[in-house]
Image (cartoon, rainbow, N blue to C red; front, side, top):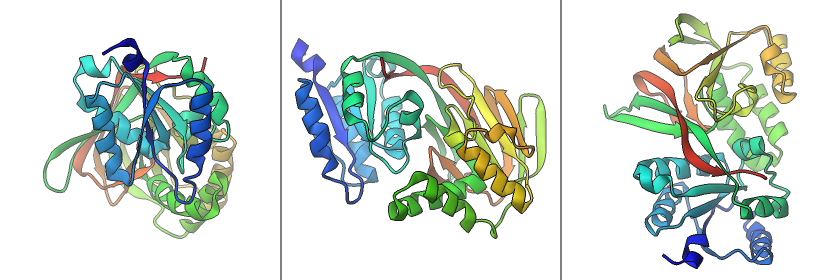
Length: 309
């Protein structure tokens, strides 16, 4: 592969519903920066993985995903299927363009600031980042694993994240969609029987929600950083209604850990023996309920990610 081929980007564009014209703005920025690239566009969730594998197999050393957290999660899991020598030769970048863009936002990438994002990516500053990993058994009895950049949610927040995606398509606003999703769940199941081990402590009681974050966890693990080899965990016990509303306010203002019903932990592993009736989501996408016990760990500095200068 010659120097031009090595510097050529593989760009995977995941259009948002009704906003396909956004690509014209991104394309203009790429051309103005003199970036050589090849472009592919996903048509569905499943096509993200297929196209990502195609870019990896065709030897691209810089792959930039134009999409949100779920598409980024798909891309990361495809990279983790590659041989370590292949994976370590690839730098992954993101131009936020999804319903939820929390991992991009953590680094300072903003959906409205395309020009600044392209400028930063063109400098190819690379940071190795951690990945969380959930290992579980599916309904077919198969052993599975799924990597994540942000978090795994168990319980109420997994349901909220599911509704959040649906309402975001209607309302357009991330904040409004989260508040509406939370309010819609006020009169639904609020507690789940959970048995899990964090460090040396066994938690065996009803909880409202649990967030295990390698990253900021959509505000629920605000002190987590994706490069220290540790997971931050927030266990939320069932508050009264007025405390729940206060918790939503603290979440939106970045002060979630100040709530009296939130118990924070830091660990390298979480073993969940039971999470009865609780939905589970990974990077904001609903997984359903794993069959039986499951384990969540972290793998340190396994992915090369392009960050702002």
